[in-house]
Image (cartoon, rainbow over all chains, first blue to last red):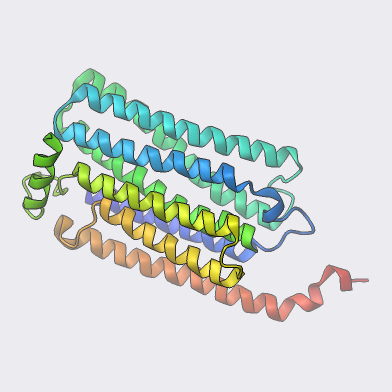
Length: 180
Length: 130
């Protein structure tokens, strides 16, 4: 668990560098679209609530794990995965919409750093979902053995950590971008 | 019903390392407190920006940054179960180190690059180029 925590802290540094890059380059639009024109705050709010709901449902899965209710735990894990998938779908819809309007990563330094930061977070969520599916199969086949419990708690930290990073993203990128 | 006994157990056995992982027992109450606080701390900044209630960009920026920072602490305590004693304090040590690194990276980059921009940009302004 401590080892996984150290990995998360190193991941935190990766995101810190990406945030710093966005902070430096985020105002260079190269006469292209600005955050105010691009960002759709109601959509971001919906996306944020998906991730927050997936955090609490993962919490419920951990509680069922502690009570040794394997099926209830699996059910909450599936619900969490679905919320995560909903988050990713909304994000991909947003990206596709932006690229369709010509706001591609190549358009300006702002858009390059935006897609790198938010895309890296999205990639983490993608791998979190893959990990979740793997664990569902593991628990399904081998039950709530000690190794699977440890994996579930590691994924719990990973998943909540992604929600923490998202707080930074919606505050620093979306809300402050629209304010600028 | 069972959650009541569970939360009581969680509070009582906070420092007991019954689990080999050293992970404190999670409670329904803890997750719900974290969730409700997070919803409030997410809704307020979105509302502030979308309605423009404060009417002042700088004040709104400071407000959403402070609310974001508080929400990160809420997540750390109620979802990630950070306590000074977990893993004999090593997680907290690693966290403090990381926070220091993050603050240096962010503030250092923004500070240096802001002054670079302030000093370099006039000559680089595309509208001034021939």
